[in-house]
Amino acid sequence: MNIQKLLVTTDLSEASKCALDAANSLAKQFGASVTLLTALDFEGEFPPGVLSLSPEKDKALREELRGKVREQLEALKGSHFDDEVRVETALVEGGGAAAAITDYAEKNPQDLLVIATHGRTGVGRLLLGSVAERVVRTAPCPVLTIRPS
Picture 1 (spheres, rainbow, N blue to C red):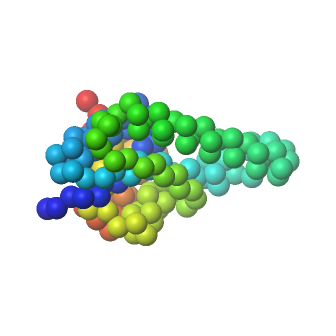
Picture 2 (picture 1 turned 180 degrees about the horizontal axis):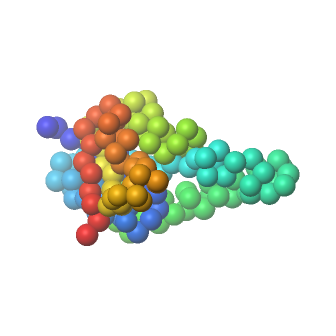
Picture 3 (picture 1 turned 90 degrees about the vertical axis):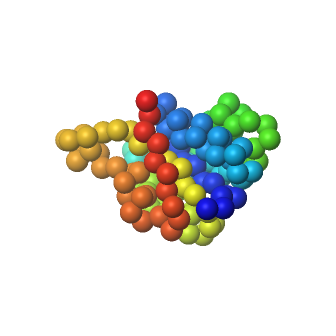
C-alpha cells in the first residue's frame, strides 16, 4: 500500500489524541501529508435556539466556536506532529460527525483514514453509537482505528 495522503480525525478529546500520534508515525514512515480534521454538528449538538434566544446571537456564538475549534486544531498540529510532517487542518460541519468525515474523504481522496475509538461497550455504545464504527462501514478508503491505551 502506497500511503501519500492521511486523513486523521479528532473530536478534540484526550481519547482521540492517540490517533494523532499514530498518524504522525505513519506520515514520517511513508513521507505522507496529513489532514487533521474535526467535524462540528451544530444542528445535532446545538439546535437553533439552544445557544441563545436570538438568531443573530446564535450566529455569533457559532462563529466564535468555529474559531476556538480552529485554534485547538492548530495547537494539536503543533503538539502532535513533527516539523517535517506536512499537516493541514480542516473543519467540516453538519450531518453528524461520521457522515461529515466520510463526505470529506469522498470529496478529498485519501489513502488512509486514521480515527480513534473511545472503547465504549454495552449500553454506552448502544446509547451513544460509535462514530468510528460508522466511519469504518462507510468510508471510501481504508480506515485504521486506534484504541486509546
